[in-house]
Length: 221
Ligand SMILES: [Zn+2]
Ligand SMILES: [Zn+2]
Ligand SMILES: [Zn+2]
Image (cartoon, rainbow, N blue to C red):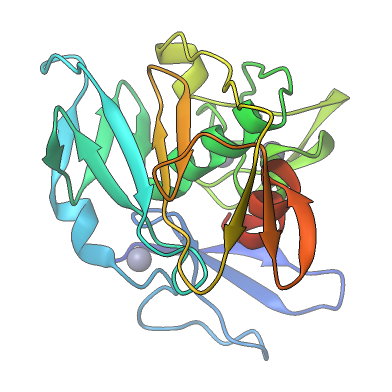
């Protein structure tokens, strides 16, 4: 699918900003020049849309094969690898939204229905915003900032599904150079290298799974 790049205003530093409404991504360089293509790097996933209303979803799994090397997960829907986006009404959900819900659930934060006052579409928070309540949200559909009354965190997935909390066992696991994270969204289970643990020993330090994943995925919004 081709980009649709729109001017969305100026930054505080006076740089012109452009946004691609097709791939939910910015489309300008450091100097404020409009790019021919937006900065989203795997555009092909938008060619494959799965409608949640027309297809029965039994399970959604998110697997980071080795999160130490790549923060782009494999998505598995109904036990098949799915290289696309989920569609529901006006919502289009990508692997970043699945990663976002994983972080929100891991951090046990309340998720609210948040709507962009500019374009009227619903809002999902990913990366560090999935566990840090905030008042100014960046709408991923139109690229505009909008403000809400009280700090909160939005999720479209939580509007569609009843997503359970993640229960981790009180257990420590040593991680060397391989760390596979498997999250089953509708069951609420998470495995690290096939084990259910709440802490890891990584680079000689003990760290909780929550802090570890918050840190690794903070920029994935
Ligand atoms: Zn684009
Ligand atoms: Zn919007
Ligand atoms: Zn937000």
